[in-house]
Image 1 (cartoon, rainbow, N blue to C red):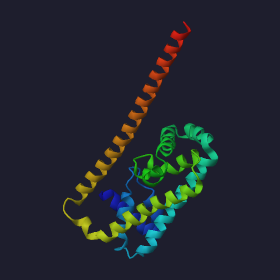
Image 2 (tube, helix red, strand yellow):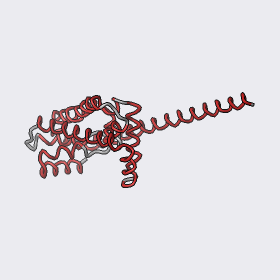
Image 3 (cartoon, rainbow, N blue to C red):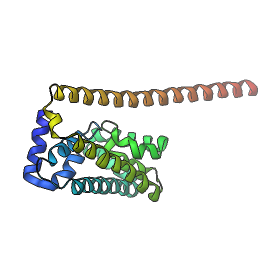
Image 4 (cartoon, rainbow, N blue to C red):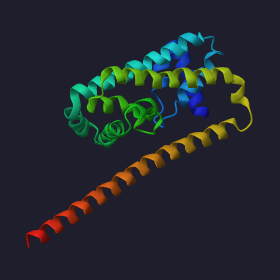
Length: 216
């Protein structure tokens, strides 16, 4: 946590308000901890809080919409390209497409808080051809929760909370807990899909066997 705090301080000193996009998109674990720390420190740094919040919302919206059009226009070609350049990203992008297909609006609004795959939900929405107006609404809701919900709460809690005993330990525990919870959710989704495929294969096998018996 001290490393994250130091990094955010450096962002603020070097980039000022333009530290917002980096903080909003920094965390791969889902929960925007860098953004939370930025808003904890913004008041002390003399930054305009409403401007920071609006900037954070805009940054997320631009990122979401860029990914949407990338997925919509690139589709499978994009996945193949990523598979060649960054093979470790390919399963992540496929997972976002699957999540959007299964959960729809919930994936776009809340899927961003899933570890690792959360930041790529826009690509999944574009790849499954989600209606652009609907995507825009869902994206705006999710971006507002992240930017205004987490950001305003962090600012109102105040910088003094960071200095409380065991604050760092508590935050680390929360980060680990939320990450594990997200991974558990992804694992459960994969397990359910596997069981569904196995049941479908068994039903098809039984139907084929019955058809062969009738023919015999």
